[in-house]
Image 1 (cartoon, rainbow, N blue to C red):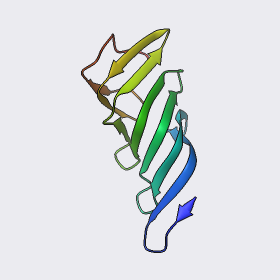
Image 2: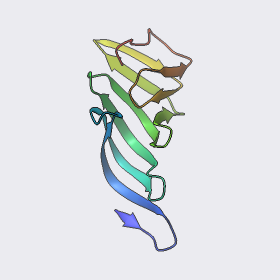
Image 3: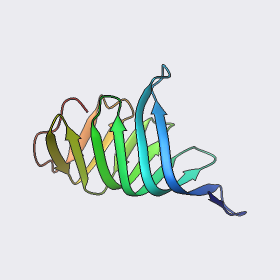
Image 4: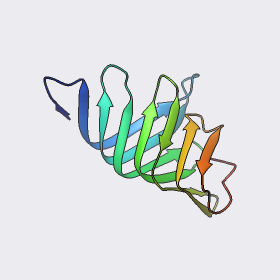
Length: 116
């Protein structure tokens, strides 16, 4: 972790984050090469080989992933790959709640997995 005196952002090498639903159950894990964590808001930006795995084994891959705990939203504005049940779907970007009940994706190629 790198922290600079004039910043409220932690710069992290090797991101490994777990998200939890409102009832305290784990909803996903996020792994990446690096990231930034805002101390004031706990917002995360994961960068480089980002892999998000949901509790039901849906894998989402992208190069940059944002997580905002205040809104409980995850999103990427970069190409994203969804892998679930042997299906692979790609999209230009996506946004989802952290329980993955609502997923919105742009320019989807393939059938969006309903189990993510």
